[in-house]
Amino acid sequence: MKVRTGWLILLAAAIAFVAGTTEAREARKPNVLLILADDLGFSDLGCYGGEIATPNLDGLAANGVRFTQAYNTGRCWPTRAAILTGYYAQQVRRDTSPSVPNGNRGVRPKWAALAPALLRPQGYRSYFSGKWHVDGEPLANGFDRSYQLVDQGRFFNPRQVTEDDRPLPKVRPGYYATIGVADHAIRTLTDHAANHADQPFFHYLCFTAPHFPLHALPEDIAHYRDRYLSGWEALRKERHERMRKMDLVSHDLPATETEVGPPYHFPEALKTLGPLEVNRPLPWESLTSEQRRFQATKMAIHAAMVDRMDREIGRVVDQLRSMNALENTLILFLSDNGASAEMMVRDDGHDPQAEPGSAKTHLSLGPGWSGAANTPLRRHKTWVHEGGISTPLIAHWPGGIRARGELRRTPTHVIDLLPTLLDLAGVEAPATWDGLSRPSLPGRSLRPLLNRDAGAGDRELWWSHEGNRAIRVGNWKLVAAGKDAPWELYDLKRDRGETNNLAERQPERVRELAELWKRRWDENGITAKEGG
Image 1: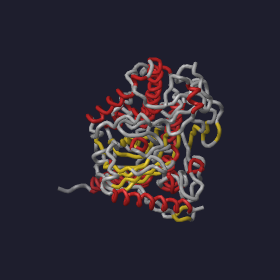
Image 2 (image 1 turned 180 degrees about the horizontal axis):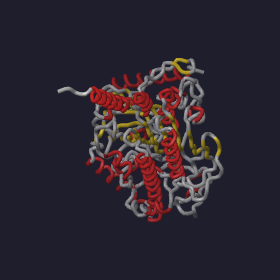
Image 3 (image 1 turned 120 degrees about the vertical axis):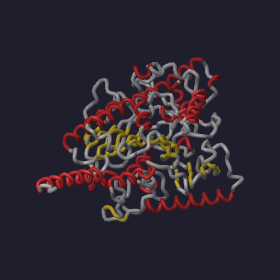
Image 4 (image 1 turned 30 degrees about the vertical axis):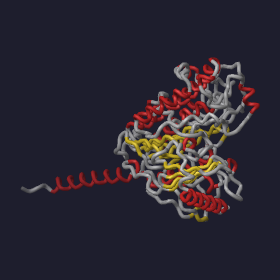
């Protein structure tokens, strides 16, 4: 039977159209929404064993993957530098390095471009909302739009807020920072859908919650007001039991380190905070009834801040859904460090007579609740024991992750995030920038891990912050709590809680790892000196 020529032409056109559509779909670069919390504990989220209501993040985890051994740097500004540059913070002068101006006020080498500048040639538009804490300004470093909370110590009435690197007028009455940051993200995404829908986007969304001061909306605090009257010891046990059932951890719960308080001592702040405050995780039953009520209220405020952040993340996810972008958006959620044991009074000071959680107060979580928030790991923010550097890490990408609700036990680090972005964009890290040679990136793309686990292997990860030191190779971790403190050695496969110090029994392994740590310290210092 003869087939008419016209039908053949139509059939060929249809096949070409389908092939072209498929090719375009396969070539379409994914969007990335990277969400960063501030001082969030390892077990604060429901999907990581917590009792705080986080249904939106739990939903992302249920339809994506959770990493059980993801790491940050133990402090806010080094983590942010590592995320955006792909280098250890010491390499780019954003944490202590020998013989180079560095740290919180350090200026990156000229070759240390941020992620948006590297993504722009691939057609990405980049947006930033929230806490910056990197040298330079967002738009000058490649972002197309920005909203920066320069003043992070006032959730209700920040005095310094910028949009697109320009100061904004005084915030309106009723403002709350967590909502304000989400509002900007939603406005920016709405604009992207209307005017730039043909381009992929990278949105870096950085909440200040639940960093101190403990400021929360009264209606959010009310949900948790009596929840924590049983104390921090009971909460640690509850969370640990849930985490074991969820297969997030397998080790026993370490004993509370009752002698470990805040990393910095501010005696005048303690006087201001009054007699209901304690700066050690004392046995709950040793506190007076008034102290127990006060302490329980502090944790209620922390929970309210996390709860509100989850609600605002839900609004942002709804925006992605409404613009048909959720399917092809990789959402990553993590924290910049572990929960904080810091206790200080800054900004507008603290009025002991004001309602806890209100603008006139300046309360901190403190080591009792911080230890509970980091369950079942040791220590807190600034330390490089597991509690200070471990973070929840959720990855959700319907179009790119086949797994649903699975765990990934492969060790990962924030230095892996930029290689992941470049991998998704289909490019390699540039060898030069601004006419200068760039060192090789120390991290690895997470993309292969999104659909399979790889185990610890011989992965090497390195830490240094304010004298606290650590290196992990495979499942072995060498760590010290302070510049002059002795090395401790742990087998994290069997002892993630870091309770069985093997240093005396394995001196040769300690020596080898200590030498490797020192070699990386020296190398990172040399890198920091290069590039103007």
